[in-house]
Image (tube, rainbow, N blue to C red; front, side, top):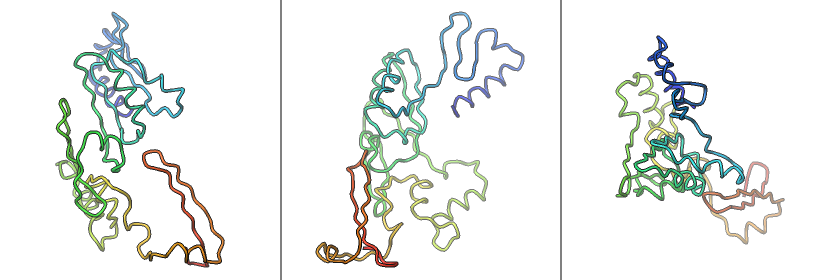
Length: 229
């Protein structure tokens, strides 16, 4: 919808004297050709959560350009395949817009080679796949950014700066793929043997993380005052 709003802004500017309304019908979600009634531009919700909604992704066959925004939020490769495989028009172009996802995202595994640049962080290089064109940018490619924004962005990666956040800098600012927040949450952990852990006379609390892109994980924690095991 954010992209459609940009299109409507340009449409309204060009339609200042109503000239475009002679040939087109515009409503909130689509643009139609007035003479034929054919839909020329429309939006379609993609992140359907229920399996029963998967059929909603099928059948947009008469499409010249499919523009998919924030595709890093789509974690289900089957849902992605269902939509893309339904775009059957000869010469159809699919444009994916995304921020860099984590290393477990299916798009990275499918279309990119990863090279480690720091412990747990990787640069992504597009694979040599026929028809694949990749344009990668970060803030240094934008000549119109105000200097205070540039200073803030650099501050995230500068130790001692009041904004310093290395994980955020390497992912959101530099655009590297992360394998996880290495060293970002707990920095003073010491190993303990399983037998020693089991012998601790404290109540154990369990936490479950159900896996989707990665396998599920179960964690057990024992607390003794301000100490956790």
